[in-house]
Length: 319
Image 1 (spheres, helix red, strand yellow):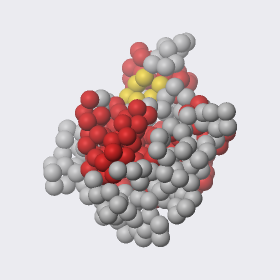
Image 2 (cartoon, rainbow, N blue to C red):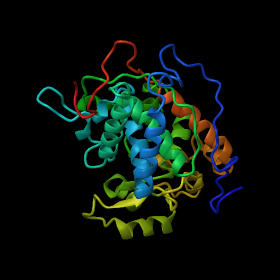
Image 3 (cartoon, rainbow, N blue to C red):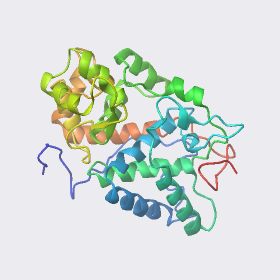
Image 4 (spheres, rainbow, N blue to C red):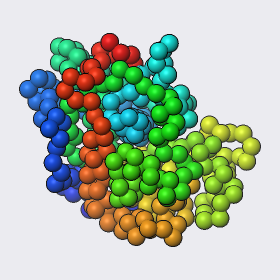
């Protein structure tokens, strides 16, 4: 069946992603089954509660996992507050005044610690599971999250400034940026589909709607109603009209030159990714499967394993 935007769902509306990907030696989909079998159901319950109260929170939790993994790997460093010895990533250009959901993560961590009787679940793993559960709650695909990451004891605003993809990037820069995180061109397009949910601030797309030519005029006109040419930089607009539904309208919009960010439209602009964007726009099940595969692949980016790092008691600070 399909909703009005053409996003197809298997079974009861959730695509179970089948992937032929070999896990690393340390990460495992069953990592907490014995040490704390109630951990994942607890995370799911709290994520569902948070997203039900505010649908936008689903995109915020997904974004936290992205921004964690792109900076020195999936190690929970994005959650650390700045101290006299830690220059936290929260104040990096791509994060400041825009990353959200830290209170939800705090709530999850506190509850999981209680359920498990100790701090056995890492903050990095909480981000990975919460990202998956958020997507599912908004009607998107599910996938088997590999677990067993440990938490970083440091963070770097400088590294975040250098590693996070920027909204003004063209395709070559985006491809290099994703390659630095161990991801290829297909991963780039699939993971960009995460913009099916959520919002962006005007300062990220103001130049596009006022100065770029590869944009639908009516779309630009509508966005200008939210974002004046001067001021209003923190006002927000949705990536697509169904910002609380994980569907394929994001890709359909790119084909119509309605990408919100320059980096969105860069995926469909007479370039090598055009064909995949067009394919995903009409093949929702293929997008769902590839999104799940790419999320698993991104989650393998330089995780701390074994005795590296620590399991933080509080996600905002080191033990």
